[in-house]
Length: 245
Image 1 (cartoon, rainbow, N blue to C red):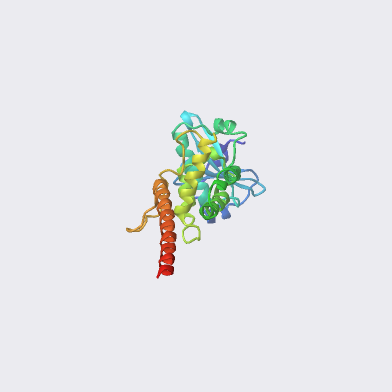
Image 2 (image 1 turned 90 degrees about the vertical axis):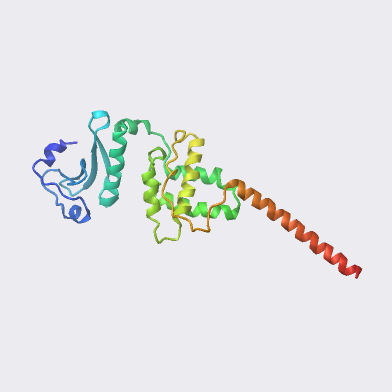
């Protein structure tokens, strides 16, 4: 890659948004434009008109570059959010180049979902599996190509907020993501205690609403079975009494 500092020399910083990116025209040589508010967030424009978002980060004081995606494949706002995420990881000492090497051969979210459907969904009832399948479809669409280990709480929150006004409830998506990534930990695809859906955003339940715990669901099922058996016995007893009268 050419020297990005020289390629961006003398250019005024801009607010990298769709209108500004669309307005960036190709020149004889490739060049960078940098965002005015988010340090290290830039756009590279080639002579052929290819526009690619980058983030310049400094894990452990060492400069590293992260390719965020091409304009058209991701939006300017999505690229900005990814840049914020990469800068946050760099602050914690995560080196993108080293991380990329370690990730070779890792599972993507789409691949994890396929495994989840094969191994976990069959353990559920038909009714119990429906919310999972709805949410998994959304997670696959939003996070599918990403590596399982790269998903953060920020990504889960982003997916949650994308469902405003949609058919799939946000809480359903977060609940499914919690189970999906907990299984990913059990199956060795993420480190212990690294579930990105824990602490993610959810919609508040009404004052008279709350989610039953697993233990409460088991007890409720037991009570309903006992009630059904008692009802059958009462109906039978009633029939016997009718015959005697």
